[in-house]
Image 1 (cartoon, rainbow, N blue to C red):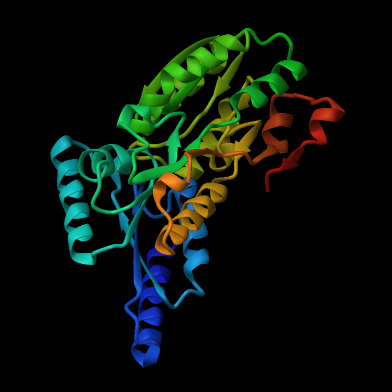
Image 2: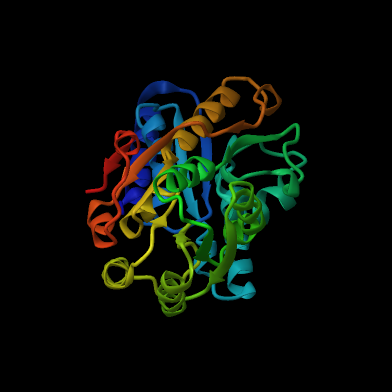
Length: 325
């Protein structure tokens, strides 16, 4: 996982302010990036880095990042405190456009406070649909996140035809709660019976991962969002010891714990969001940009875990998968 993004963002702000002070004469345009997660959470880091890279060479743009850190707030009081802090940041920074990444920021900040106007908004990382948030509107557009579940399940069944039931094990975050019913419907449509469990802590995750490897034909790991006490090293060691069935995922950061998967390219959404935000700063309106859907996918295989369960893929499938390092 990448570290130090917020420090880099601060450096961008200082450099841009200095260049403008030295004689540009025009006030910089301001983008506030509302990150639903915390710094160091790989899927959101990828989106955020794409935005930072796009504005790094733009001395006329000041970028500020606020981490809502919603997944790690243990109770409603803590979450409401973070929401108030985010709103205070908006008021103090006076952004010309907001970029909101992932469901929490959209649900808790954009939908109740900016859906009907005030500041143009571009969202990214909202799973499957934005209709439940009353979006899009004249002031809000964005790009939806659709994991390549069908592509992955079809590859799984092509290589392991005996798979009939699947256990879905994920964190208990806003996004995962929202996704649960959609995933079950999709898996049923691909001919799999599925059971879904959303867990709050690492020990619970380990217990159910082990049990699923005894009872299910395959295990699907959407994400670890909201899992308290998660430890990357201990998780990998546990998976290596206990894996007995094909484990798949559609998120690149989860490939360490899975045998294979076709995954989203998180940077695609950050690039779309910042491109759209810059176009809005140039005079366009959110209504000029219909809500988009991510298109890019990449396939991966974890050779160590595949060998662990003695799973061999067909040559045509292997040709589409890059080994995880």
